[in-house]
Image (cartoon, rainbow, N blue to C red; front, side, top):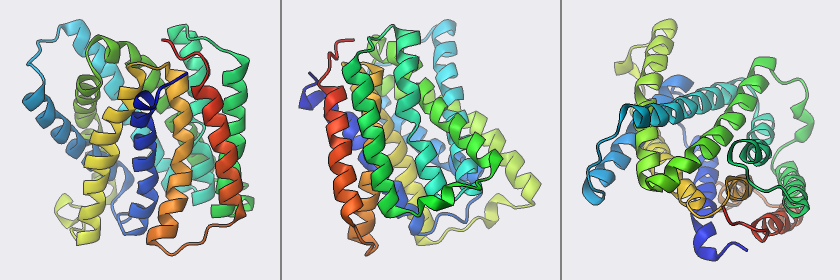
Length: 298
């Protein structure tokens, strides 16, 4: 059974990602999606790299190691690009439902790539957590709007969900060889030039000058939250989980994201929480417990 010290990292990461719901309400939607992804990762990379330089010994990486971290960087870039573009092309309910498919992708991918165990308890717990999450989302959004979604938007969000599952699974061996901090840092740094090129193309196609991007306090605050908290801190904490737990077990804590988003919306945005939040939260928590209490030895 997973100990509290082992699960606090991924739980906190999911909570920080849940905070993105409130941040989006505070006005960062005026930045084009690829450009926003670049700003988020660039700020996250600078933050992580500063910490590595201060607290970790300098390390000389071989060409093969650079290639492995570069592969994770590609997954980061793919995930953020498709997540932001998909969100831009769908409504909130569609985006929320599709994004939480990440744990569903991670479990079988962990079995196939890392040879992790697959028990009835894990599968059942994942199913229960999925149902609980859907119930929570039904209290936050009108799920009748899920139909009629943009095909491109749905496809992009499915790719984003798989991309983060891939980042979790293929990053696991590197985390255990180096550390969560270094793996999160080097993979994020590798994603910066990829997203920088995408942002440049996007701004050129839109005819927008980088100097004309909004610099109001809400926008700057949103970008700071995305870069420092939702990227640098959250990605490090997520990888801290896979230092000692199976990737499929860590992934189940991703389901906490929409519940935290709903709770923060209640606290900061005066939104209401109905019976669906309480009932769905209890079911979701039961599913998370079933998965995390299974055999978690990597």
